[in-house]
Image 1 (cartoon, rainbow, N blue to C red):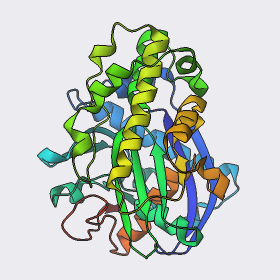
Image 2 (tube, helix red, strand yellow):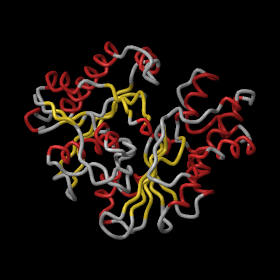
Image 3 (cartoon, rainbow, N blue to C red):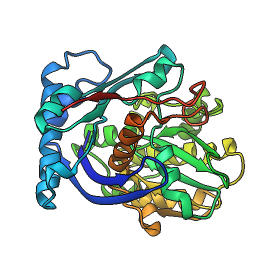
Image 4 (cartoon, rainbow, N blue to C red):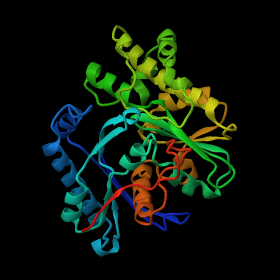
Length: 342
C-alpha cells in the first residue's frame, strides 16, 4: 500500500526478457489511509477502486512521458491492483482495480485479475512472480533462492533443471512491522531497521509465533498479510516490539529452508524489506548461505514486481501458464488473467 511501481518490459513471455525504464509513485497519506480501511473486504470499495485505477493510469502516463516513449510502442499493460483479501482455503481472493476502466483511460489493452482462476482451480493464488524469477535467473548458478520481502514474504527456489521450481509464502514480511510502526510511532515503516536495531527481540514471543501450524504445512502455501495475531506483543517497548517482529520474519524465512528439495547456494533478496539493514543483517547471520540484494546480480529490486506482472500479462494473452503445481499448488499448469481491450 505504499504506492505504484510501473516498469516497461520487452519479452516473448518465455526466456527473452529485456527490462526497460522504471518509476515509483507513492500514494499520499490520505489515499493510503482510505486504502487501508478496505483490508478484509468489509467496506464499500467503489470510490477507492476508481481512484486507484486512475492513479495507475497517471503512473503509466508519467513513465512514458519521462522516458519519451510513444504510447503506440506499448502493446499491453499488466495491472495487478491492490489485494484487500486473500483466503485461498475458502477459494476467495480479492484485488481491487478496474481493468476495463484502465484500458479506456489509457487506450491500451490491459490484463488484470491475475489470481482468481488459480484460486478457483484450487491453487493458492500466490506467489505469482516465480516464473519471472526463473526467466531472470536463466544464466545464474543454481540452486538459488529468490526471497521477496513484501508485506508477506515469499521465496522462489530454482533448481538446476528447467521448470525445477518451488515457491511459497514463508511467513510475515514487512506488514506486521509496518503496522507496529504506524501504531506506535506514526511512521509507515522502520527506516533502515533503525528502531529494531535499538531494541531486544523477545525470543519467547518469537517461538510462540513460530508455533503457528502454518510453518509445518508443506508448500505450496500462501498467506494473507494479517494472518498472524501479534497482540501478545502489545506490552513490549516500541523498539523491542520492532526487534521482535523483525526476528519473527527472519525465523520464518529460516524455517522455509526445510521445504527446499536441496540447499540453496545463495539467496537473492528483493522487495522493500531489502532496504532494512537490520533485517538483512539478521538474515545473513541466520541463513547458511550468502545473502545479497538482487542488485548484486544486475536486477532492479524496486522494479521486479512490476516487471513480473508485465511478463505475466504477456503469458496470459499467449495462453501460457502463470502458475504451476509447485508454485501455487494448482492441480495443473494454469493460465489466468482477464484481457480488457482498449
